[in-house]
Amino acid sequence: MSNVFFDGKNTIPDDRPQIFVDQAGYLPGSRKTAVLTFPSDMFSIVDENGEKHFEGAVSHYGMDACSGDDVYTADFSAFNRSGSYRIKAGGMTSALFRIGKGVYNKLFRDTTKAFYYLRCGCALDEKYAGEYAHEACHTSEATIFGTEEKLDVSGGWHDAGDYGRYVTAGACACAQLLYAYKLFPKAFDELDLNIPESGSGIPDILSEIKYELEWLLKMQRADGSVYHKATTMRHAPFIMPEDDKEPLYVFPVSSMATADVCAVCALAAGIYRPFDKAFSDRLAKAAKLSYKWLEENPDFLGFWNPRGCDTGLYAETNDVDNRYWAAAEMFTLTGDKRYSADFVKMYNEGFERDDYVRVALGYSVIGGLGSLAYILCEREGRENSIASALKEQFSNEAYWLRDKSKNSGYGASMEDWDYYWGSNMVLMQHAMKFILAAMFTGNNEFYGYIEEQLHVLLGRNPLGISYVTGTGEYRCRSPHYRPSEADGIEESIPGLVIGGPNRNLDDPYAASLIPRNTPPMKCFVDHKDCYSLNEVTIYWNSPTVFVLAFLSGYGSNE
Image (cartoon, rainbow, N blue to C red; front, side):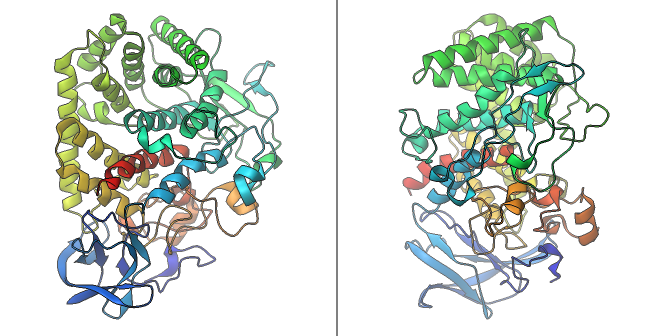
């Protein structure tokens, strides 16, 4: 196999075994499979001392379209003994994996703690960040683009591999994390992230989300509209955040940013009320103000980078899904039937019969969060027939994704066109949809497909790579994330979810390394310059946290 799939340091050996497993591990009572790309009659499970504990027959799956592999499967679901193991077959030995109730605990903490490392506007103290500590960054006031006016927009999370902060992306990530807490609060009750706010009496996850919400509030104008982003004019080179001294700018208002801030503030207001009434009241006031602006400005106000700016665009072609989400959250927060009426009108008229928009979970298409809010809403005046129809749409989506997973030799609920920039986000959002469908329908069949998607993310894929930094023997180590290159530390910050395979090869470096006829699942290089493959971002981590929050409760019962 060509070494084009690996970075210049060859951090993932080219001679890695062609037996692919979830390198974090498997829950004891779940379906457990490894994928082989060579024929073998039998396989065995051995411990770290080489002692055999299980033996089984290998079955032939056949050709897998998205990888181009002739796939074989080793099913060891019957083996439930906790411990650390490897699969052996055909003279090869797999990466190490674990079986046990807590196999995802560290991963859950790592992917959640990752948001702390992405904080902007403050120093990361060694007490909380360890060797990844650094000085405060981006604390200067920003210029409102096109004016001489200055604005304090310090705070929030760095969005991705760059140091920009983007409202729609931040609102999406916050919402997915807030819904993870809302639906699975017990998963976070004792999750100690070791952040400055730990021990405050507020769950650490809510303290971390608050850091981003405070920044979103700063981006709201007095009239309720919301600036689209805060960045420099161009992306910084690979330097530490405190060394990025270029002038900061706040860029013009967009209607989708305004709607998203309205929605996430309304959602958050209800969640924070038992812990911090003053903050909850601020959020509710901000949400109402932004909704008023939306009512007074019904036309779409998009965003395009001004001349000379090349930071993230986060453009959208309309804002119906954003306003739909905002209306649902405002109705949930207030019970005011005018918000429900707005929601129902958009449900009936706004999507031109595009059912996908009503189940899409973000960031660029976010109607699914509005649907989720309306389904969960217990306010008088909710139209139960619409809530039932939305549950059915999530269910239908999950059945469609189930069939795609069945048709994949690796269990991925993906087709070739799903492998675009941030394909691992798609994978994890599919797992979210399986979770929601299981909750809404009671169909336990979906549970297995949740884990199948996570197995693909964590190494049971045709490159044998764990796409989460810090997890797995063969893991991504060179993300397109500026501090990972600039800090001089060999190992990247743990818990960062990598974008993943991208058949479109949207950056020159990736296009120069990967032939155009490469199967979609193999269009990946672990190299810092391949930003369309190897970048990280907050809204790739957030759906992963959602999935792991669910599995932490589900797995404890296995």
